[in-house]
Structure formats: structure tokens, C-alpha cells
Length: 161
Image 1 (cartoon, rainbow, N blue to C red):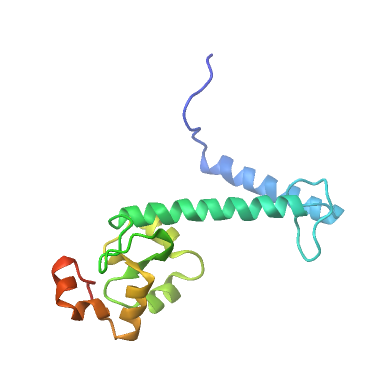
Image 2: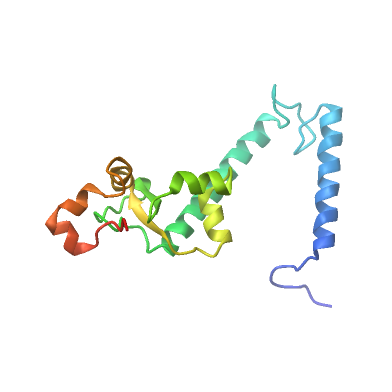
């Protein structure tokens, strides 16, 4: 039989067993005083990973979050502030169109809003804003200062209602 191509499909039972086995291996390595990931080096003080594994984990997490952030920004119209037109990705963020971001973050708990948006199929009610426009809405009770400028109103103002 030839080699399978494409992603493997695993049953939930198989996945649960694999997670349980991995957990047992990590606990055994911790008991032995070695790195929970590689099992070779002693862990850093107050950590369960050695220096090399900890560095790889941080780098991997940053890449994953950056990819997810880009996916969310694309889902909500692409890398441009809907109010002022800013395109520098470092300045862009996701805004709750009708406000209530603090309350919503409390409801969904800790973790990433980006993960929640992807998990829920990128629901409506969110938009891409630059940090200045987002904070302008916060400080001006839901109205971005650009909305007061007649030139910006014609382009695509921040939606506040």
C-alpha cells in the first residue's frame, strides 16, 4: 500500500489517549528532574523546561500568534484602519464596533480574542482600527475624533452605533 498524502484523520479517542500519554511522559520527566519537553537537560529554576526548549517554545508561540492575528485582520477587511486608513500592521487592532470590549473580554475569559474570533467563524460586530482610532473611541465615549472631520466622514468613518 502506498504512502498516505494529506492530513491524517485521528479519532477523538486516539487523540485523548495520545494527550494522556504525553502528560504521563511530562510528569515522569519532571519527577526525574529533567526538562519536561526533551528529557535531557535539567530545567531552568522555577520552570519545567530547559533553556533550549523554553526558547523554542517562546519563538513558536510568537509565530503562531502572528499568523492568527494576520488571519483575523484579513477576515475583517484587510490591513487598513477603516477610519483613518493607517496600514502599518504594528498599529492595527480589532475593535468591537458597538463598544463593550471590556465586558466581552470578561465573558470569554483569559486567552486571545483572536482565537475566539476564529473559533466562532469571525462573527460580525468587529472591525480593524489603528490603535489611535481605537483609543479615540474609548476616550470619546464611542466616537473616534476622525468622525468630526468632514473629509474623513466621506471616506469610511469609524462605526460607533
